[in-house]
Amino acid sequence: MSAPHDPSRVVDAGFDVSFDAILDDAGIPGGAWAIIADGKVERAGAHGVRALDDPQPVAPATVFRIASLSKTFAAGLAAILVDEGKLRWNQPIAEFAPQFRLHGDAQRGLQLQHILGQSSGLVPNAFDNLVDAGQSLERILPQFRTLSPGCAPGRCYGYQNILYALSAQAIEQAGGKDYAIQVTERIFTPLAMHTASFGRAALLASPDHALPHVRKGEAWRSVEVEEDYYRLPAAAGINASVIDLAQWTLAQMGRHPQVIDPAQVDVLTKPRVSTPKDMGHRYWKDVLTSAHYGLGWRVYRIGDDAVVLHSGWVKGYVGTISYSPRLQRGLVVLLNGESNRLNEIVSGFWVRQFEALRHSAPDETGAIRDADESQRSEGAAKH
Image (cartoon, rainbow, N blue to C red; front, side, top):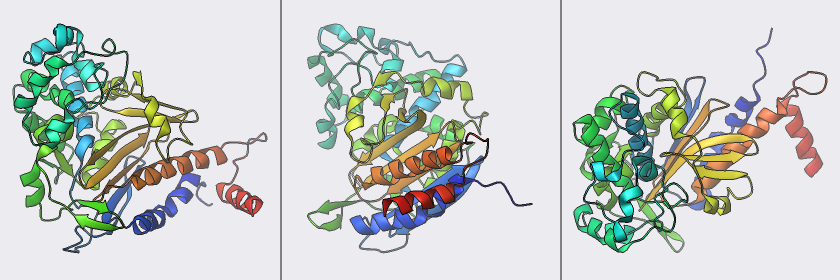
């Protein structure tokens, strides 16, 4: 007797080919990916080189700077501490970051959930230009006294890095240890994320790491790994491979309840504020029906199906973690070149996943429609 037909695996069969083709077409130096299914890393692969001037091949175990994917770890660790009764989502910012002030003491209504939920009411990316200029957090924070929120906390979306970084102070206060140590002990180690680390020095010390690249005109060039956002560890301080991040994705999908309770993941991924600009992003705009931010995670909908994800972008690196709670499948992608073709890779994957699901739905007779047959028919109709 033959095994039951699984149309989603038909979709996955060509992922490596499409991934390689997109990187080659864009000239992106290198990248790695991992597909998660059935409670494990189903497949993983890589393409290209770690650096243009030292062309060692990228592998699934190659370490990348993951930028804002780090935000998911801050939210996750906060959830662990909330579950233990050591932290509260409604904890006022004055209790863990008393040095933070807004114009007219408008910070009084801010809580931890507003920081992790990107719903402080502040103008997006407030004072990130000072991070880019190499200024320290201590030097930047007084500048916030000049800002007034555009809406009440929890009412509107405004993406932040500096404010998000203050969540580390809440975590350190609740857990009694340095933020990076807690992430390592509570997440990296129990999930066997053996190559995950914090900071520039750790990235460069890894024997298998990718270096950053940017495009100038038609040519790609390597750039220095800058310290800048590493100074904000809760917002953008982590390095990891796709193999490491696949384990973190599995934890979000309920496969590591000893690390994070699935009930807390539900709290993190509940849509809180609408993110309308996401609806206009290239490669996503034609497929999204809604876009929101939860706590440290974005929640997109393609038709009626949710995709939980977060992306990261810092000079020379981009990446995305994503998963479908319904399908219990996930995709992690990391690239060592700045390119919005990342969105093409990720959105295309999920569109194909949900199309395969629809093709496998029972017809009026109760029979399963064959995805291969339906795709051949659609292809014939187009030509």
